[in-house]
Image (cartoon, rainbow, N blue to C red; front, top):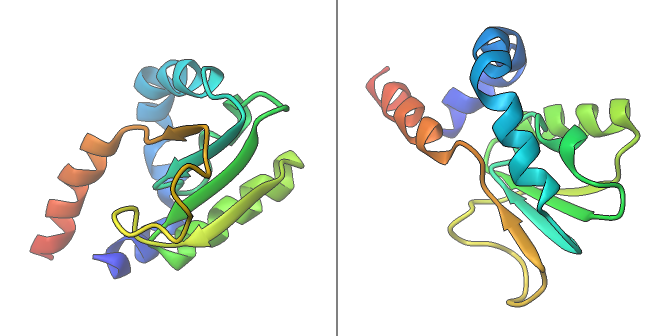
Amino acid sequence: MIGCWDAQAASYEQKTASVERRFFADSRRGVCERAAGSTLELAVGTGLNLPFYANDVSLAGVDWSPRMVAAAERSARRLARLIALTRADATVLPFDDERFDTERLTHGAIERVHARKCDRR
C-alpha cells in the first residue's frame, strides 16, 4: 500500500486539482483554521493543508509514504512554513501522549477508498 502512495506522490496534486478546487479547498480551510497550539496533522500527504493553518500554530505532520513526506517538505519550503515531518503510521505514532493540543485528519474516508483501489492493483 505504501508503494501505491509513493507512486502517486509526484503527480497527486496535479491529478486531483479540479476535485480539490471544487470540493475540498473550503473544507480544508475550515478544519485547519480551528487548529490551535501544537498541532499534529495525520496523513499529511503532499501538504495541501499547510497554507490554511494560522502562523502561530506549531505544526507536525506524519505520513506513511516517504515520497508524500518529501512532497510535503517541498510544499513547506515553498510556503516558508515550519513543520516537523515524520514518516510514521498514524496508528502507531512516535510521540508522547498529550504532546499535541490539536490533531487533524482531513479527507480520511477518501484515502480509505483509494487504499482499496491500490490493494487491487
